[in-house]
Length: 149
Image (cartoon, rainbow, N blue to C red; front, side, top):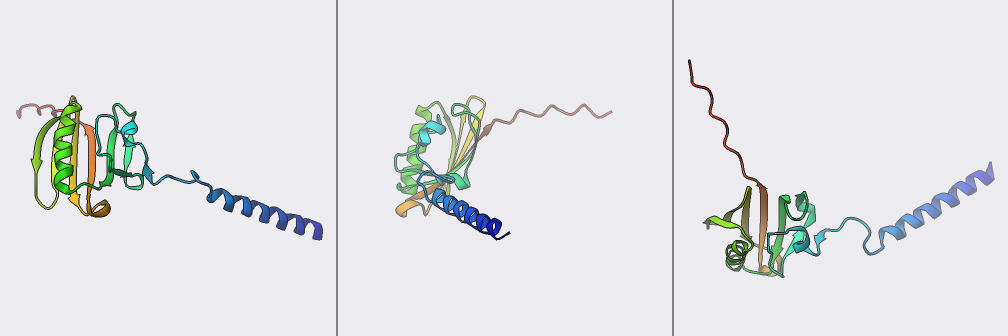
């Protein structure tokens, strides 16, 4: 009986020690930032100073035709980041539909059957700005209801 208790304690101690050391290994656990956004966000060119926050983002699908929400920040000012998106996304095949400026700037773009809504606001990395990009399929027009009788 004593031998079993000692063996159990040694086994538990070894397991806890291994788990603790694994938790501290580089690369273990869930990454909090996307290190290569261009690889996953094809068609949405981000500035080099951008960081994508994976805990606040949801990316579905493959890199060429993804849909979802991407949140992050950039070292660029709000004005510089809006200019970046309004100049670089059309070069990537997006058509700029609207830009609205107020407390946060909103851009809407279309590419084929996809729509991108981008919100840029002050208060990001190192005094820069933050962004939220939502990409989704374009809504199809609902069929007209039948005429009333």
